[in-house]
Amino acid sequence: MTSLSPLAPPGVVTSDGLGADLLCFPTREQYFALVESFKNDGFEMCVDVTAVDYLEHFDRPLPDEVVATRFEVVTNLLSLSKKRRVRIRVQAGNEEPEVDSLFALYPGTEALEREVFDMYGIIFTNHPDLTRILMPEDWEGHPLRKDYGSGRVPIQFKEAPGPR
Amino acid sequence: MIDPTVRAAERVELLAAETSEGAQELKRRADTRSDELGREVGAVLRVQGLNVDPDSVDYDRRDDETMIINMGPSHPSTHGVLRLMLELDGEFVLRTKPVIGYLHTGMEKTAEELSYVQGATNVTRMDYLSPVINELSYSMAVEKLLGIEVPERAVWIRMMMSELNRISSHLVWMATNGMDLGSTSMMIYGLRERELILAFFEKTAGLRMNLNYVRPGGVAADLPDGWQDDIQVICDTIYERSFEYDQLLTGQPIFRQRLIGVAPITAEEALALSLTGPLLRSTGVAWDLRRSMPYLAYDQVEFDVIVGTYGDNFDRYAIRLNEIRESVRIVRQCLDMMPSGDYRSQDPKVTPPPRARIGESMEALIHHFKLFTEGFHVPVGEVYSAVESPRGEIGCYIVSDGGPKPYRLHVRGPSFVNLQAVSLLMRGGSMSDTITVISTIDPVMGEVDR
Image 1 (cartoon, one colour):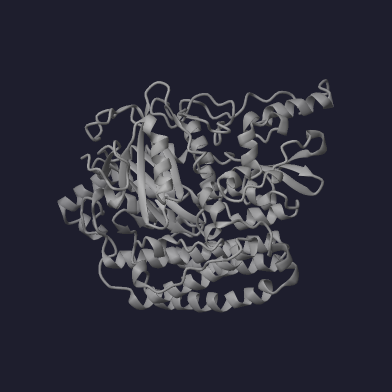
Image 2 (tube, chains in turn brown, cyan):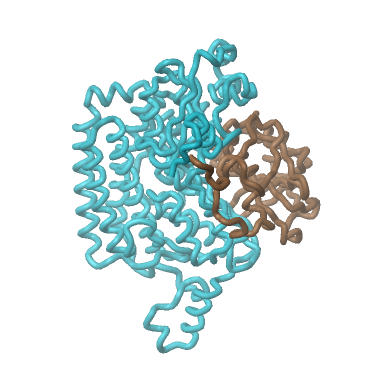
């Protein structure tokens, strides 16, 4: 499972994903340095940042060295010159998930990381403006978490209107 | 009912308290973190190792010289419920921040509660101008997880339908862009030509928009009888009329002055901001997933990837106009090369049986019942599949836990990411150019907010 791909620096667990994508499983500490090395290696674009809440699936298939946590941040890098994709799955933690922001490397991750923060409550350190992006600012909870029941909150986006 | 005891000044405060988005809004310079300010004025990109120009960042400007105003969310030129906050110095825009989420309906959450069969009806409503392409990226992700092949004819039908969809989406763009720049005739012409394509969609799939036509395993229905004639008419008409648009707009002096040299962006900036689609190609980067990472049968047809040079509004206009012609070219090749055979996979676990079989075969009845109550089970795994939509790379990330519903479905919307370019493109431009910039970025708010 831990084939050391020539693309990834040593010490990072990798495997092959469906559709010929390379998968990397760095730790939280390795994450930023790994993305930086990919960027220097010709991955010009960070296409996507998203996350998954594996509340019910701590037993999901992962390489042996990786310790599964509840939240996983999934980053997609694209190399235009190599025509390759790399998917980086970093275990972000259980109670207070937190990973480094990629803003310093790819400014285009700004909105994507805000969306992940909004939907999952994952903190991105060194993000310039970590506010909610899709939900209203005073919203409670993070909707895409698995313990956030849909239909739990009656649809009312602001407090009851006052006299106008 | 207005309460007369509340004074007007208090009403303003109440209104502000009820409608404010707090920290999401554009704050005054004094209250903004320097890296956030740097992002809003585009300095972050320049410091990224490109042309560092410290003078271009005016951190010291005092707040009382400028004014922050709202544009939207209900503004006719923002193409939906997009709200822009602009910091203005007279007529010039210093900073811009898009505030989004007004159309957020939790579609990714909804997707977790719909089976894979129903999923296509959900994703098709995200980017409502290119429904076929949304369904395509979703269906291809599911098929990758299932490990099934779709028949040759389904591949070509999908390709033809997505190119027709690209044409119709670009036509809407031509129409609204013309409208934004004051050419109301273009509005009418664009929608008139799109009508041809929507009528064909209706004939084929039964619906004009949100087709639910491309499904995991193939397409919902075979092409209707006589489809060749319809396609021929559509291709001829639109190809011919694309030159009328040339006459109407391309050489028009006012139109040119509003577009040429306005809001340029460099290739480095576009890559750093993860922009895709016509925005990226306008800077000269020939990146089109149809050519660079071919899916369906795009490696078997001939077409050109249109690129620009200056990355300005006019390049983005010219790219879309020419992409209409290239798409017509692809559709014509589909017409000639359309193979015969099945239009959907014959795997009974994925594809419902034909209606006639249900009456005579117990097995078919069971398959039909299972498919539409429980849905099919998809092996454990996660997959990302990306296709080229009219707006850029639309990607679908699906995590399956082996059940009949996706454990997680994420759509990487090109409009959502491209919208980040707003702050950079508008900086230093005049107020009237904001409209053209929004227009040439071409965001579809259904996909931005999902």
